[in-house]
Length: 244
Image 1 (spheres, rainbow, N blue to C red):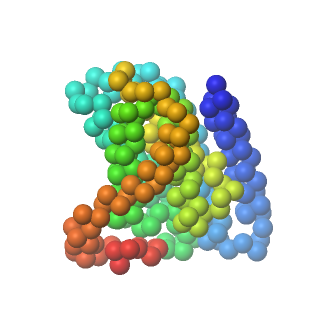
Image 2: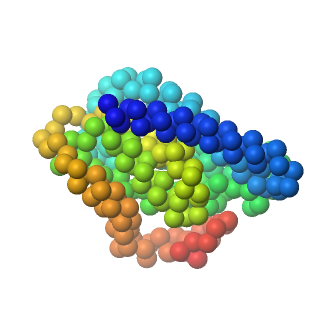
């Protein structure tokens, strides 16, 4: 299938791009220790989450599918919760790497790949809180359209790549983000049961990207609660926040 080929091409591209970027950045003495630490964090994320994590998820996909389907919940709720769980797991890795800045030769607050060194603050005010409405909207799309698991992987990877690019990440590294984000939805999509869903037409794909990208507006009714929590918790953020 074309989607399988595209995933392999993205994997090869990501491998070559990250290897080249890592070599150039680490070998250039003019780059600061902070820039080098960020690259080391990114490479570590690629190895731990994308390579090791992705390999484990793929090789154990049938076992995980069986266990996932045995959970006595509606498939749509399981999809949302499963995606959220994998997103939380991915953030465990990224926040850990941010806190390893001194081990990478930098200082706390000078090199980071998460908005905060605090896990709860990161997922509650910056990352996973935004993903949840995305997973909800995606679940409703999957309720109506029978998207293959590879397509769900690629679509959410594309959405994540667009999101990272709009936040200042280089578009040339988009292949890497396909795997960071795609793995969040891989197992939940692979474990979807047979359902009364239609085969997708071509327009379902751009519609999915658009609807999922704008879905964080669903958080609007909860902004007073989130603002209250922000004020009470007074988190330390390394980046600007809409709550500040």
